Amino acid sequence: MTDLIYEKRNGIAYLTMNRPERRNAMSPRMLVQMADAWTDIRDDPAVRVAIITGTGDKAFCSGGDTELLMPLVNGARAADDEWEQRFLREEPRITQTAFLNPFAIYKPIIAAVNGAAVSGGCELLQGTDIRIAAATARFGLREVPNGILPAGGSLVRLQRQIPYCKAAEMILLGDLISAEEAWRIGLVNELVEPGRVMQRAEEVALRIAGFSPLAVQKSKEAMYRSQSSPMEEACRIQQQCWEDVVAGMS
Image (cartoon, rainbow, N blue to C red; front, top):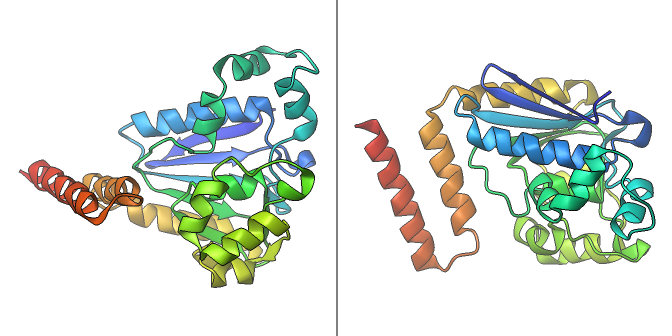
């Protein structure tokens, strides 16, 4: 059994975190496989859009599997297999790429949040573009109450995606919030019944896949590159992407 199922169909790449017995917690193997998958998605011109989800209906992802990761990272145990050896050899690139933090993919990424997105799962969510969540899902960052930092992106991205005070509340208190609250503050786009999460994500993905890939990718590129830029620089990036699309039409 693979920790990450990676498939491609009809211009859509599917990533499924596949450790339901551990609430899809991220193992070293999963992080390596996810980094490889994101790299392939970026480089494969046949892929128009990606969907990431988790196996089962309990969890999208419960974060890093601390029982496997922490002893490996701090040297308390040796690597058990080639995945763990590669994880240690290529850190921190593996983790940064897996969490899309930073790793630029200008193809849209849709999160199909089938259950709880906690800690690393919530951080991974912030690297996606459109988020379809089950109405029963919950969200939160449990790192600070456990004595560590949510450094997989939340300390930088979350305050840019939702109101600062809500980001501070989620990070500093570590309480889980409901799907309704996540929707209210803009952390997710849409809530659906639990059994319709993947169906709705595929509907959105197929619609995007039917658009001009250049227009889609240049739109995301402009948003991604300009989000922390001064206005003048942001407008320059926008103009450059516009010119790239026009040139591609000729």
